Image (cartoon, rainbow, N blue to C red):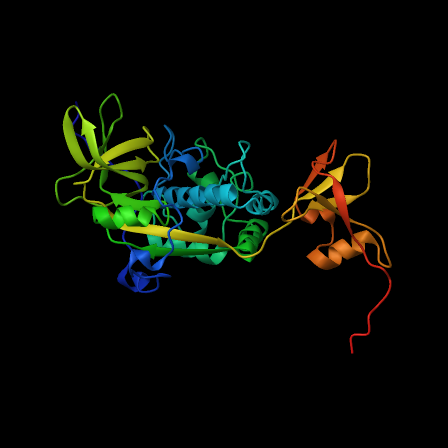
Length: 349
């Protein structure tokens, strides 16, 4: 086995002047509400993202793990609130499997990731907070891209799409303590970002070694997705096991609670405004949307103002295509109501 080690990851610490500018510096973890009572984010995972290929080392682990935190939270939000999915569809944030699929290339370039070195948390999380998020299909990448392709300049159109995300969602982040108890409580509020010391062990398996010698050289960010307590392994009870999602294979890793994690971060995403899902029956002109509490549709109908003008006035769009729409063979629910005008005005003075 070769003893040659090469650095992996792409994390470097925030400069002191950057740390002071972080959106929510330190503070108690329970300042934020509990949104996942069992602290298990595995069911909300999208497909893991690989950081490296045989051709390239991206050094974008901070962007990958931060994007993974966002994906898990968006997947949870879709499960809890059906109004979230139409917004993500409109913004191009859903993958072919219907789960959130966030572009890691977008923050990697926009936040100033340095090929061959990496980036700081401040740069990546502040970029998300100020410039929003875009879907993988809107700014795609693949492992065969050269660094020049991967880190090509962001277009005005893609930056505008990221800002559009911020019209519908807020993005915040917070540093949390790294004790096992703190991390367990943090997982009830968000998927975790954690930093480890990593090196590539140059043997035939291409294994990764994460140092645990008490003074690790922190250089790689990954995600914490669950913490298990009192786990029986080979007749031995392990007090704490951290379930980790990495950007290096194997993507799923287990860490004992004695591992010295650092620079833990959580995020908070909240929906600011909702978008109705529109339905149009193929071959018919009517546009409908679902009643908020009944299994019934509301149709835009002509009165003293055309139904299309009424719709555009209510939702502030020029075209129906500016909002998510499903063209259906049959209405998913009966049309029970019309949204129309009568042409009669009440004296409002």
